[in-house]
Image 1 (cartoon, rainbow, N blue to C red):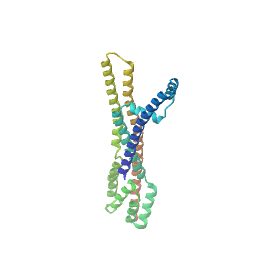
Image 2: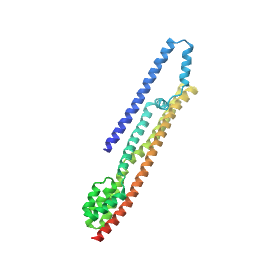
Image 3: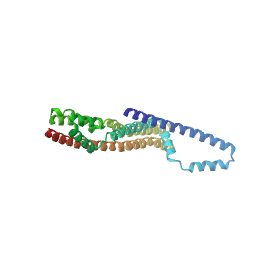
Image 4: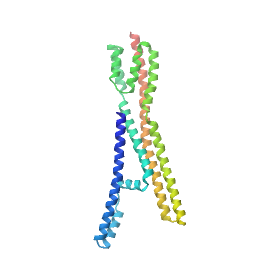
Length: 269
């Protein structure tokens, strides 16, 4: 199910990006055709005024982003976009998983204590089986070894807690990779763009402000895009780390409470 969520998210984002690029190309073709028709049919002064008004008219944010994406170059901008898509897909999958992993530990402990008093260890294990989340899984492993003593239960809870913590942190290394990779790709595009700008200067034999400025502008777009992607993914990464720390603290606190309940139950027996 988790892989399905991630796969659907990736496919949706890829299709959205592709549609945006194709839509931009169609708009460019339609705009060129409209300008040609206007130049052929309208008087000489009116098309100039219309073109000036269109140039001065503010564009929407969505159109500006698409224009900058195409302006920055398809190769490196596509790699930066892929970093954003895969990073967001992993982050969304982790958010869903962590939200499903959250458990009302106070209610769970109360249900386990009531089950121990009414039906013994087997009834408490049944409560854990019917409850989702890592806390319930840890409790089940501890209750399953209750006959071996409280010390064994404690070791089992600690060992299985480490396993659950590894499952909670699954995928964070890949998000961290995309956070580092996006600005690096942006810087690489900038360096290559600067090299092309200096190649143009060398070919012309003189410094042209227009040629140099255009090449540098295109090169810097990739850097800005990479930094924006890294910032977005960093926010999600910090949220996930904070969420995991909260769940781990809850697991440790609940495990101590479970051991106290088992000690009391053992003394009653």
